[in-house]
Image (tube, rainbow over all chains, first blue to last red):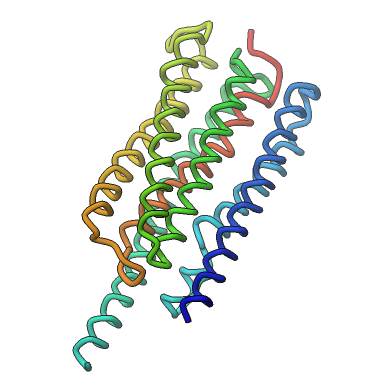
Length: 74
Length: 191
């Protein structure tokens, strides 16, 4: 039982790390877009929306709001 | 046994209601930040304030990293890992403070304009100031959560305060996700 919980915890830690890596890559990407291409406003909005969606889903756990089960580790 | 189950389901129900309330608050707060974002584009259009883009990248990275550690801290307490929770929370507090120093202590000091100089300056100080106040509030909340955590008040079953502080912290991060490109990256430097 405890082993299963540890596995689940590790899995969630890894998910957090993957999300952070994606956010870091997107942030560096938008930095270079901003520095090099001054008028590329829409791609910057696109990246910002993607980053926000990732944070809201995986860090703020929006799905929990709709979940009935408190122990749902989504 | 029945009392224990009732207490647990009561706590679950309460947490569900609290969660809904917190998200409603966040939604209403998001409208304020949305208004500031619209003001920025109304006042500046396709120009931006003259700011250090590198410093913008650094403070943004710090805030993103803080979100990562906050998520780690919250995940840890959900599984009863108090040490992991305390370490993650402490790192988040440290990074949040560093972000504040970066924006208010450095960026505000080196910005080549004062608050009332022009529209670009005015909107820059309003947006970053309002956001910094939220970061400060988040740091204070996290310090409270950390102190209570050290006293052993949270467990895998009962940690709503940690979840609430984490959601608030990530929300502050989401706001910056939009403020960062709007202030530092989009458009030419306003003259």
